[in-house]
Image 1 (cartoon, rainbow, N blue to C red):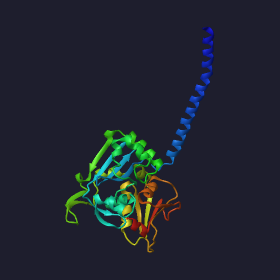
Image 2 (spheres, one colour):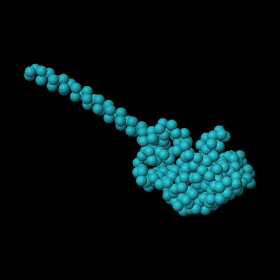
Image 3 (cartoon, one colour):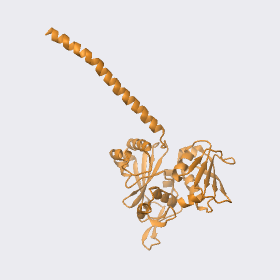
Image 4 (tube, helix red, strand yellow):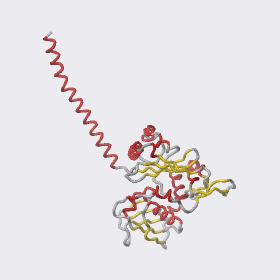
Length: 308
């Protein structure tokens, strides 16, 4: 009996180093995977500033504002019978037809988000297909979003980071605002003779505060817009959206020469203001000092006019 006991102890003593080695390997794997994930997330475009996503939902439009700093999600619903200005110079359409129109014209979802930017003159960072707002109320479905089951211009790294943010926000911090209940829409007969809603010029403070960025406001950059598109519309659009963000346009210039370029932003340093403008308007960036006493210079050509 005693020999058996000693033999068993000897077997256990040999197995301990193997268990310790296995635990060490698992710990190292977790450590390096964590480092890799942190590295990926450090490359993410998504920062501590709010993220704004446009998405259709049962023929209505939605603008989802996710704010990591306040841990809130605001879902703005746009009635399907709202009269909108379609991007790419496609004329006037009802909200309920916009996404399908983009598909028929072989555009991706940027047509949808650009149309909402043009109609409401509000900043939108990303687009996602049908029903993205449901993720806010069902965080368990975020795995499908991460692994590209939901069409969107949000890349894989940003999907991970965005999912972590959504998962951390309590359900009671999700608020829904229907635009028909605000002063932004007016019920009337539309150009097709049927009843619907038109968008009024003045955006209520209830909405502007949701799009306002404290980070951009605090940067307080001096911005110059140079318009070479032979139309004042692009300059008005950019200025309106930039000011909603919390920045201030200090100078407007109309170039005597018309160029076919789209949107080019010149600045030497990086900033949240720069990143937001590049993301919203699909502008290119040139690391070059702007002319004059400005921090940031936005150059608009005729291609930008064609985009919106």
